[in-house]
Length: 385
Image (cartoon, one colour):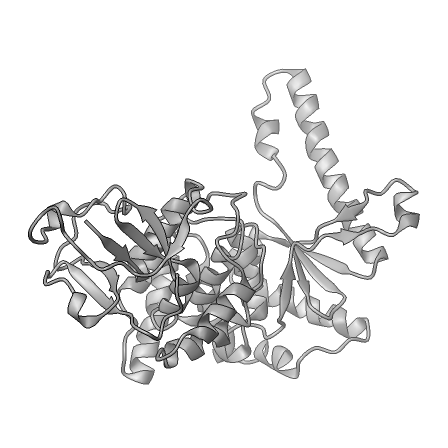
């Protein structure tokens, strides 16, 4: 059997491969010609569900998305949804899994999802593919996240790939436009959420403060190192060309649970010491970065989940830039004063956060888009993000 999966089916499989750290060993290939052999005809039960990270055999209502190298090679089976790729696709856009299976590479997946995903979700996908975290294949919003992975690709590779593509029209334009708001090396989904909101333009209900850089190691000055500082620090997010950065500290940043779980005085003393050491190190990090010319604002989960919290954070950031004599886009100030934009931006933020309420806000946004433009996003949006 030979099959090449793509689009949402491919993204699900790619996420499964990443969390199993199986991506780096795969060689590149072109889309395969579908072939059911050694069987004579296609049957849904023949599709290797385990190898393709599927819950069960595909069906007419839940088809498997596949790519074919020409119209003549489309399988005549209702449980397949075929995309025909010919001369417009660069060579070796797929990853060869062996056993006659292939999956769309991360660069092609970013391009394919452009017309399917709303801008914030699509930018978030870019941060995931170019970052060191991976979402759950089955429950990408709320499932377990895998950390410390090798990036699946990077921004430059995606840009080069998309520019090589032909005949993709609007999808190509969208992908390149949104890629401008993506940066390499995101370490977590929450970091990517904050970076997305900061970088997205005001018309996409972001703050228009991009571009951003993530987790760039900054060397401390020798005079700081001589006085006991470490040789370098890594702020989470920096506004490129600005003296302003952000560090996201989630609920697990300080291991307060270890204090509550301590059963003996020695365990309690150790837990308190470790939490205190982490707290002190964070404060010193911010001081050292400030001494090097970068003011870092701490960000908490409450700033992102609570209504108005992110707007308050950005208002403080813009005020800081003004106090430092640095300008900020006028549109960034104006977007904080417009009640309709405030409401839409809050819905946008809530729609990309990793919580159970996200699909509800994503549907609110989708319904508004349908009313405004007379067309719906594909159902695979909810599956893919």
